[in-house]
Picture 1 (cartoon, rainbow, N blue to C red):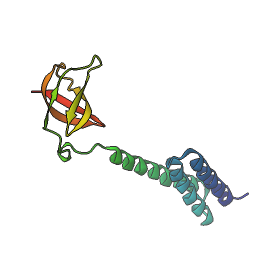
Picture 2 (cartoon, one colour):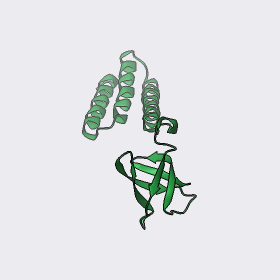
Picture 3 (cartoon, rainbow, N blue to C red):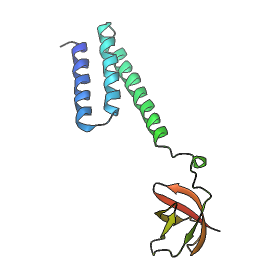
Picture 4 (tube, one colour):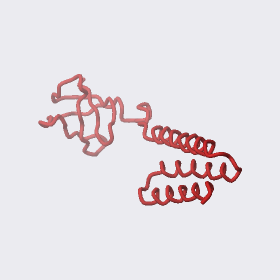
Length: 137
């Protein structure tokens, strides 16, 4: 069996594994194996094929990870219209959360780490998922 056939089998195996796992990282590695198969078609040596697979596949994985991290980054706080608004906290639970009413809906709120929770008027400092981060006024 020649190098080209082996690289195409590796590519097929990586694509099959990706279909079972649901991660795009294996697809990026399959791109590297495809590049190595092309290098083998062009008559390059085994060392060039391995370096090609590593560079293309590794670069694709790194670029995909950077894209994923950028996508997961939180929305800048200046885009949240609720930041700076005030809410009234009646009481804090034992676990450090409170239920507050804001814009006609009930929200779970947490206090900033610099302050101990106490009832009263608080200002919204941030939003973490579906929780309001409050600071005592």
